[in-house]
Length: 353
Image (cartoon, rainbow, N blue to C red; front, side):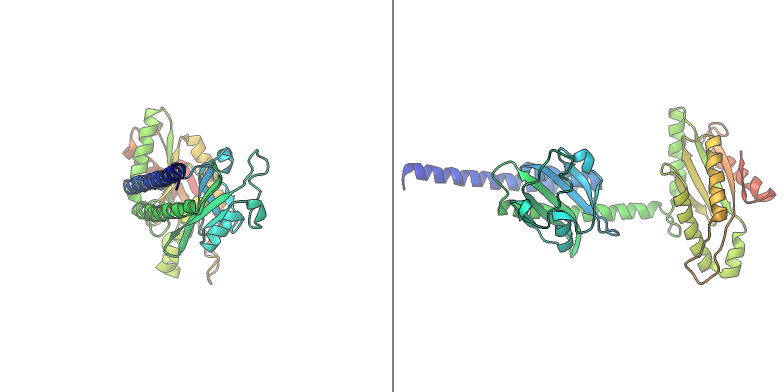
């Protein structure tokens, strides 16, 4: 063997060794990063940082699977088209990523144009052209959580070692994502009412405190609405507590569907509910409550049971900080008192403090 061949061989071995060392170092750092957080967004960013450091590609993304629709959602995207792709959904089974998610198998394609599974929709309308793809599933046990996809490597092309490394990172990522989601579920259970899925009274008190403090700091308003279902005891006496509980659950769904995304809904206890309306004046709260009452009068409950459809009415009371109250406790008391004015006089109406 000539000295030139020997030098070339040694250089190749050194390059391979450096690559392995870099990969091991990246995996160690990824393991550390994933053990210090249970926040899903931080987990996803840590995963993609590791991918960027080990496999050089012009575009990479992490997509999570929506269990209900089986669509893939772009959660982390590093690409010239990142703003356009972030949050976008891929129909079930569409494209290479969809195929990998559906079959739970990794794919490495050096020329996507020769593969019938490739979908060029995301290339259209941009200056980006997909040539090569490496895509691996994120799997926990037998369940696919999503995929990691790399597009267009900077060097001559993806190799099988890239796919193996990406699969190893995906294994780490899947465990961390599952742990983060379980943590989120536990946190949600702590603050959620079992029956309605709304916030519970303990968390409601904390939210009111936060919103009143924020309103005071920034010279804003916050309105509080107390809701009491009219004659609900009659429902329990007539149909029993199981049907009454179902009706409360359906009312929780009704509230979620008829308030703004910025508002908070909670079950205060029994058949009483509370709405927290950030940055909302008394006039604005009154408009929302009147719309809510009008929708309630038209809504039918228990339609998916063998019982006749039921309708509900409610008594609503509004109080606004700082107009009606100087602190959280006063605000709660004033909204509660306003609701009882309706309860005593007419029901099926709204009253302001």
